[in-house]
Amino acid sequence: MNLNKFLKGLAIALPIVTLAACSSNQQTDSGAGTQETNQQQQQDSGVDVGAAERTMSPEEQRQEKYDELRKEHMIYFAFDESRIASEYAELLAAHADYLVKNPSVDVVIEGHADERGTPEYNIALGERRAKAVTEYLRNLGVSSSQLSTVSYGEEKPLVRASNESAYAKNRRAVLVY
Amino acid sequence: MMKKLVILFLSLSILTSPLARGALEIVITEGIDTARPIAVVPFRWKGEGPAPGDISNVVAADLMRSGKFNPIPAAAMPQMPSASGEVDYAAWAGMGVEAIVVGTVEEYSVDRYTIKFEVIDVLRGQITGGGSQMLREGELVASNDHILDARSSVVTSSQFRQYSHRISDVVYEELTGEPGAFMTRIAYVTVNYNDDKPYQLMVADYDGYGERVLLRSNQPLMSPSWSPDGNKLAYVSFENKTAEIFVQDIYTTRRDKITSFPGINGNPVWSPDGKRLAMVLSKDGNPELYIMTLANQQLQRVTNNRAIDTEPSWTPDGKSLIFTSERGGRPQLYSVNLQSGSVRRLTFEGEQNLGGTVMPSGDQFVLVNRTRGNYHIAKQDYPSGAMQVLTQTSLDESPSLAPNGSMIIYSTTHNGKQVLALVSVDGRFKARLPAREGEVKSPSWSPYLR
Image (cartoon, rainbow over all chains, first blue to last red; front, side):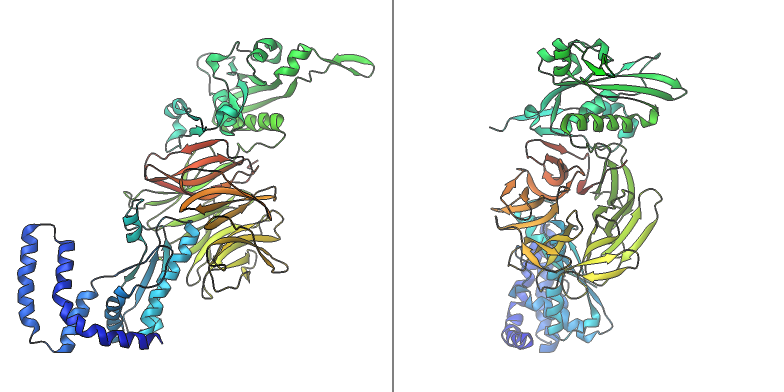
């Protein structure tokens, strides 16, 4: 059932992937770029890459897109939630694609929670998030033997602050290769 | 209506005591105004030079921190008696002081001291003039019924703090009828991200003195739990990049790995008889409660449910566990009878209820209640009854009870840092134990250490 959903999603997502490649790259740049010159350089190289893209086959384009996506290892969750938001479908598809093609590669999926709630409950919640990601990857054909989980609950916050934006960053699963 | 009384004490002794490095400074934030006035008169040093230790300040701080007593400062005392015979009862009674503690310190031999003390009922002493008499074998003799307790011991200077806590226990029991819990310790976890091994398992006297590091790690440490004999701690360590339960002897440093199952190995809690460990394992799919018999490492599965089951706590009779479960949709507390397996829901108020601990008396439990997004420590009658919220601090969690059931130590957030705090079980007395650097969490109060 989940695989079906994914295939349908892929059929819709693939054309969007190619269309969105440019704009989503810009999104990443604006997030990371802090210096004017840096941003300028990245934008220039972006134009060069764009020219090369036309000569790539659809499979190559997809691969490049996936390689780019796989640089992101985090999936964020809503409060008290372990459901994977649809915005992470491509990201997880990219990781799954890589893991299926490289069956000797293992990945540990860490589950984390924000500081609200008790530490023990958050360990359970973190595990549920990690397991939601493993389940998702398994449904994309990744072998169970490549996947393992560990929940750190609220013990390893990404952002050490007590506010909504910190909480949102701390409720996460991380793919650790 | 809440009088905010902020009293800083102990700061002087923290500066002067060599044991105080890393000690937790206790700030009383609320409730001392409702406590009973008493006096701990500075013990008279009968030797040359400076006194070898300050007993009366330790005793006064203990009694104040119990939330039940308000020791008056030495400067306000009408006189400085060192024995019952010197006491001007009217002067103390006139100030409303109910009871006084007096004593002496005398050199016995090299670095050994005789400490004598008396606990005196001021009101009774005023009535009898300290000269009450009774009939014994047909003769009228002094009964001294105003002297509630009088003891004498020989201790070394390094034992002064410990003996002071012993005196506090005696005074507390004489004046309340319940045993004191001053000769106890707390275990807790500190996190200092600037260290190469940020996670530390610590143990200290209940008042923060005598702090010792039991374990340093570059990965998280969680859930310390005392064995009932006070010799061992069970805890969770991620040192091997996965959760594992360890048991460590706090005196010999011997350390045994107890579980390393796939998934969660969490929240070990010793049974009242010390023979079993309740724990949370997710090896069979999702978090469930198990009980391990330590002698043969045999596991008994307690819960079997698709929802999260976690946070076990033993009832004092060892026959039931209370625990947190999401089986009703949101985390709530339940109890399970270990013989029959029957499960009963305990909490219904608020959005979530978690982290329950049954009190030593067995007729109440403390818990973490979430109402309108706020997490506070609360208590409720067991097995059923109304809930009373005890704290107003922020993100309160990990409540742990003193062995006499009088106080709760818990983890809270103050000025953006995790610190420990105390609240009396009646909710009136509140204090904070701020750390100087890093975070402090997962407090666990020891059993009586006799």
